[in-house]
Length: 305
Image (tube, rainbow, N blue to C red):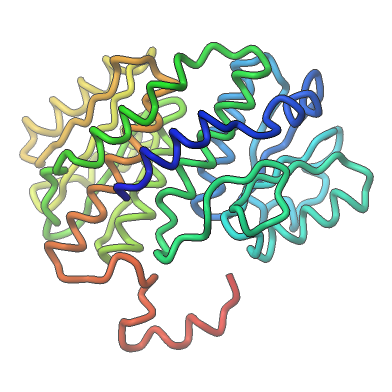
């Protein structure tokens, strides 16, 4: 995790063919796809691209594989994958290419992606791969005219977030993460990482999805993490944090609003990674193994990723 700031600084200093790839997206209808963490990046990438005026949407790769009509009217498929090996992303990308769509891929340096990120990580959590993919998406959006803020500030924001202890101890029951706008997907990513690294029950929702139903189930056995990157829903997030605290739930507010909502994705993403790591250390789990060292995990190895 501590290598993320340097890795992102390197990608900023040497952006590679970002401008050339951006030209392929300009003025065209784009669908961004991925699986797991890469799906969260896809949703955030589409949000970035819309800030540049593109007609951009995102979908989970498996959903597109099962419903090919989601590609109707799409001109560019932007496929996200750390290693280039995820089943449904590979399947959808091949189908798009065969169907005459322009295929753009973002992936690790060992892949033949159009925009490469970082070497494959030894940890199955793919922390640096994820923030590097997000940076690539931000670079594309910026090249297309989006005002996301000064991307050169990202390594500094990430370095500070990596070193800051989360202060979130594993609760008796559930860690609930909430965010708004682009950071609803940061909340989803945090829940994925916490389960993956520490095997703790966790859930990541948009603030409104949480308020309209799931909020009634929260209690003293839970911990609510509110991700506040600024933006139009900041006041709403803080009101819900206050209500949860007064109702007896432990609450941690993670605020990253000094550089604008778009750039908040980076420190908030690292903050939820840090929550996952701190929980793994507290519970003595291996945050890098994807549970392969857990007895009884063997049947899951028969289900391909």
